[in-house]
Length: 97
Image (cartoon, rainbow, N blue to C red):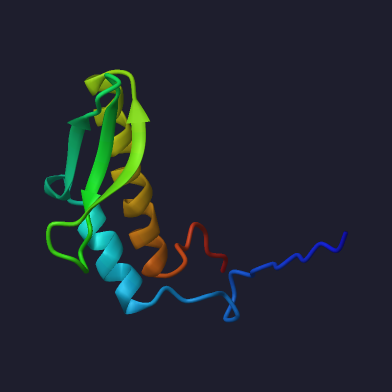
């Protein structure tokens, strides 16, 4: 078996986030673009509105309770907010004189 590893650095060679990805993440951080639906088996499914296609909802997770589903949505929103922060570039945490 052959394995392929790819590494990234935080310098100038780091992969850039495209404008399309920034727009996509910006869409996903708004809670109005999410919904929770109840499935026939009693579970609750979280979905987000696909920004490229009108009235096309994409399923993400399934949870046993509405509270769990809403927590999953909040966690996803936090995740995509971090992605947007990454797109702004590295954060300076300490400088030396």
